[in-house]
Amino acid sequence: MFNRQDYVYQSSDPKGDEGFGKLFAVIICFVFFLGALQVAYETVSGWYQNFMQWSSEMLAFLAGFWPF
Image (tube, rainbow, N blue to C red):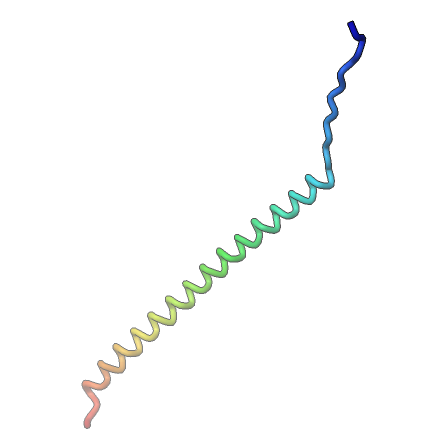
């Protein structure tokens, strides 16, 4: 009846895709940074707790030999 062609318009926004990719990369890097920060904090905190436990045990051991 009508000789009409239908067109499919595909809108692609390469700058929008690039912006989304950059934002996603920044978020992933930030999460990795927070993970590394957590590992460093837990390591230093563990060292501190172990040192305090060792020093208190050493002090208690030396107090047994200290002449009062």
